[in-house]
Amino acid sequence: MAEWFHERIVDAHRLPLFCFFMGLITAFICTRVNVRLIRARSRWFGNVNVGDTHIHHVVFGVVLMLLGGVAGLIVSGVSTGWYAFTATVFGVGAALVLDEFALLLHLRDVYWQEEGRTSVDAVFVALAASGLLLLGLRPLGWGSEEDASGGRWTAAWFLVINLAFAVVTLLKGKIWSGLLGLFVPPFGYVGAVRLARPGSPWARWFYSDMARRPKPKRMAKAVRREERWRRPVIRMKIAVQEFVCGRHDLPPAPQRIPHR
Image 1 (tube, one colour):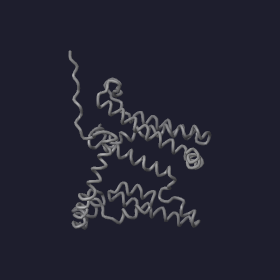
Image 2 (tube, helix red, strand yellow):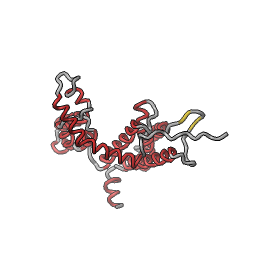
Image 3 (cartoon, one colour):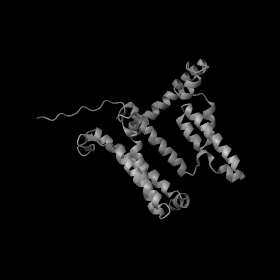
Image 4 (cartoon, helix red, strand yellow):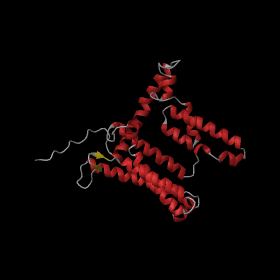
């Protein structure tokens, strides 16, 4: 195991990325454990308040990202060990920020509401992208065509085509296929040519009644596929989210009123 780590991580200059990945996943797990204990009203855990102001952990995340990012720029060419440490700090800060991504998106506290699942999706996407990079996959096949043929124009066109397919896949509402398509282009090819999800921008632009040339048959087919195939997958994803992070659609626990 030590030889594999040294060969695939250290020698491949991926130690800072590995430290970022570990900091991200460890901080996310610890944060979720902490907020679930707060929600359960554990006597040992509570929110951070300054007067009447509740300090969300996204604030600490921004501070840590700034410290880790700026320090990483300073020490990147000086010490690999310190560079890896700053990457860890940056990963911890990123976890704190992404865990409240829904707060930034909606500009209101929806942490335990249904919209709060967006934060969990953001963390999972960050973990997946970091993990794929850690495995050595290059976004859009960067460098593979140039190394194989020696042609920069061929490599540039290859990148543009892969990016276009990935963007179309994302516009069709297939987030995970689009993400995988950025690293494994065939996923983007398949996602781009298949039918869009009914609630996606692509469906609104080309299938719905708001489109210049509506395609009701395609919309109906997309809805049938959503109900038959996508809904069970979504229910499974929500079950995994709730197992890891807790329920997001429960009403808040009643406040305890102290006796006087």
